Image (spheres, rainbow, N blue to C red):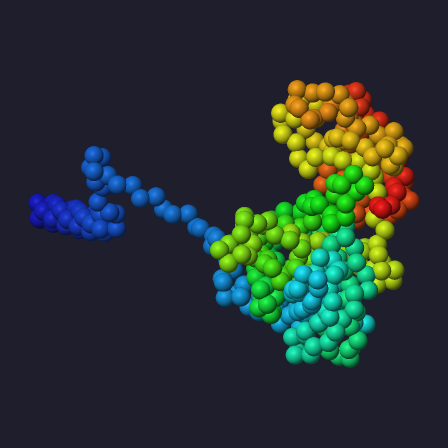
Length: 395
């Protein structure tokens, strides 16, 4: 009996071992199935778990269709205020462009378009055609004002923008009548600001005064565009198209456009046109000195200038405002024939630094009037000095 009990206990023990072993094998198989096989080191591939990635910011690139829509709107806004000008004169006649600035019938154009015009016709986009009268001209800015007597409802004045706020690279459009093709719009950008061109007025010595604060653009401007508006995309006039840089004459006899056009800034228009309407002329402030539009390093070294920026005074007009104030022009010989040294280098006007002559001219045109006293800061003999100058009037 005792032996039998021992056998039963042994059998029970073996049964327990069997059951535990089976459970262990099942548990291990479950674990092995839940773990991917491990590759040998020489063939192991590691794929890092990607980190959460935020959506990149949406960059909207204007499609041409969107740009075209804004240009279409611009044309709808501005074109009703742009007029075609036709005239006759001693040379036979010509054409140009102008734009309405108020409900009183005043139209802005170029001096070179309207100055000698006879039988001046103003053609409106509506089909209305009337004669116009030139009531004011300015040779320095190349601006003129024409007056027409029409129903105010026929007039769509354009808004003058702030040309000081424009940026190089900004999209602009010109509307005009190139070669008589009325209502033509071309598009480009602002290529540069503050250019200096020759005035149409000659000095007593036969040279020309300077016309400052001019906008350079690559919007196509051709004969017939003169006097028309240069517009920003808000439909505001930021310039009056004046001239183009040409490269000779085409086989048909016309000027070859190089993609370099010039427009009188709208802030110049703001100063000049009211006086043209009221007085028929504009009195330009006069400094009475000449300088260079730009200087090479070779010139700077020959003049022994202490810095590359500023407006070097090449000469002063005897008895002019600058001369009377004590500003000095160049008189000493240099290593460059025809270049006189010893002149003052103007580096600031009324405390505002200037980099070149164009910035000096822009300041005078936009901020001063005849009789104003300005303060010029010059470098003379390596020393900075302030010299007050009372501005005269161009004759």
